[in-house]
Length: 384
Ligand code: UGA
Image 1 (cartoon, rainbow, N blue to C red):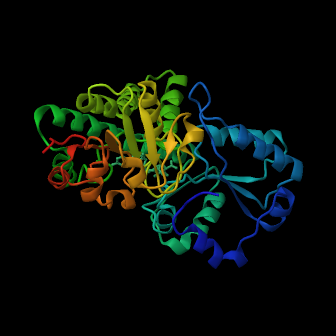
Image 2 (spheres, rainbow, N blue to C red):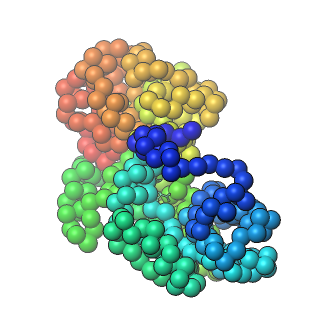
């Protein structure tokens, strides 16, 4: 099971229209449009692993899909995959099966509203009737539809994620410079974002981006370019900046605590962002591993992730913010869950051994925290 706000009630409300099966045969008998939504994790080389996609084709061959069926690729796949799938279908005698690319743009934690109110729906096809069938499915959403070729649709997905990741690494570097020159990145981002050409979204500085998509897709696009002989220099920097950003908290802690060995540090929030229990590429994992390597005792709390110790050996789990923070030499806000941000900071401060508070998401008010007695440090803001 996954944690996604609103999904459980939606599934209950529509249970009569949902059916589940492990039999592809049975499913093909009842479907025209078949969405492929398997994962495409990175391989050791940074390329996307397409083995699950290929397994679907093997199974379609075994069950005998036909001209009634249109395969729709929802999985994030490298540019060129559609053409490869087309060729594989032909080779398997399934040349009459339709194909369309329909990349996914929803965000975890906001998946339902992103689906129901999308900025755009992108559909790439080899033959217009296949794209028409997919477009008809989306008609009730009255969304902006972009019709194009399969390779362009595939590229829209990678380019969008890579650009959003670039925005984050950019603002994180601006934040790091702000710390040096005494500027406040939150105000800088607000001032920048009002320029319509820049826009306010994805300009929140923090402890780096994580999740199952940005790290994987940025690397896959860089790899895809490299495979065709093009060195995508900008993306190399986007990735490197992100890796360094995750580690900057360690130096901030060292500055306040002198040594980290034997200290107790509370990590508040573990998931790669609020609203999900997804720990893939979460910044908290890198941070925890670095602290443990320094000989620090790491006590973590997250409202939905409770198995941190299984992911990084040595992390202790607390069942509340209070329990994580009690006796700690420092607390780090890693994921801006509302329940964590709304904690009783005024009373927590007295339970800490030393009241050092590193706000990795700029989610707290610096002056208010200073008034409570914390030694507060955010990202790209001057400390009060
Ligand atoms: C991302 C994209 O936003 C979706 O459009 C896309 O469909 C999805 O990947 C995917 O390819 O499947 P997601 O990974 O769920 O969605 O999460 P985001 O909300 O984009 O956040 C990604 C990471 O960036 C998080 O760690 C978040 O904390 C970080 N972030 C985001 C920032 O550090 N600053 C920001 O301003 C925004």
